[in-house]
Each structure stands twice: as structure tokens, then as C-alpha cells.
Amino acid sequence: MPCSCEKPQPDYPESDHWGPVLWTILHALAQKGGKALFASSRDDERRQWILMLQTLPKMIPCAMCREHSQAWIQTHPIAVIKTMPYDELGPWLVNWVYDFHEVVNARVGKPSFDKALLGSTYNNVSVPGAIRILKPFIETAIRLSGITLMPWNSWVGYVVLLCSYYGL
Image (cartoon, rainbow, N blue to C red; front, top):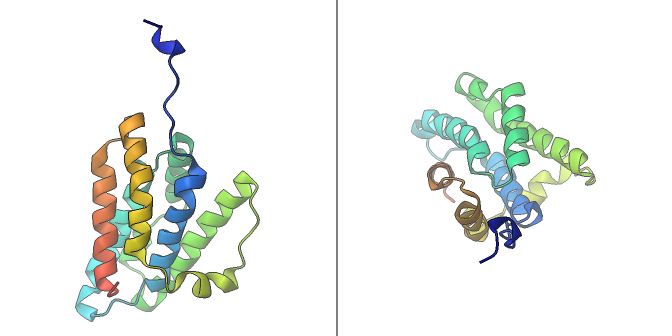
């Protein structure tokens, strides 16, 4: 029997597989932010955004990406979501996600995305459909890498609740 160091390494999902779908979900939700169907959902919407963004680094399959996302959240605090005027929530979320994505794009050598195209690109995205696309990549990473299932399940739960506030 060969030594374990000689065995082929697991085939982890590459960030090119799960990254674009994850960004699509974040941008699509940000486009809906601050537009809850019912005023009674506004405080819950704020809480779900905070929980979803706090959990994000814990469910990302790439260790380096997890570290970068955690650092972004620490330097661009999300707790302000709790207290900002509700009419500022949507634009703040759009800017926060866009700025985060732009920093990642610059780090990996991808071109900048025209901010003026955010609405036309992400307004009609099916977030539940995008979750279905993302799921097998994340679940494969969980099986192969030791990332725990709980953050992924929690993150999906927060996304599903946000979708319900927006009628998605």
C-alpha cells in the first residue's frame, strides 16, 4: 500500500467553478437589498444580511479566499446595517458587494466590472437557481476539505430568508 503522501490529492472545486456563482448570488441579493415587500420585515432583513455576510467566510471552500473575505469584513464592518436609515440599505449593500468584488478581481488579475451594469446584469437573476448551481461545488469541497457543513447550511438559510423578504 502506498504512503498517503503518494496518493493523488483530492480534486477540490476551483474558485473559477464556485466563485462566479457566489458573486452572482451576492450581487443579485444586494440589488434587492432595502426593498423588502413588507415594512414589518425590515428589521429581520437587516439581521439576515448581517448573519449571511458574517457566515460567508466560513463556507467559502478556498482557505485563502476565506482569509481575504474575513479581512474584508473586518475592515469594512457590516454592523452599520443595523442602524443606517432603511432607504440607504440597498445602495450601501450594492456598493459593499461591488467594492469587495472589485478588490478580489484586482487581486486575481481580472478586469474591473462597470458599476453601471450591475442592475441590468443582476436584477433578474434567480437566486434559488444560482444556489442550486453553487450547491454541488460547496458540498464537494465540504466532503474533501473538512470544511464543516453547518456554516454552509446556515448561509443558505439566511439567503433563503432574504429571498422570501424580496418575493424571490
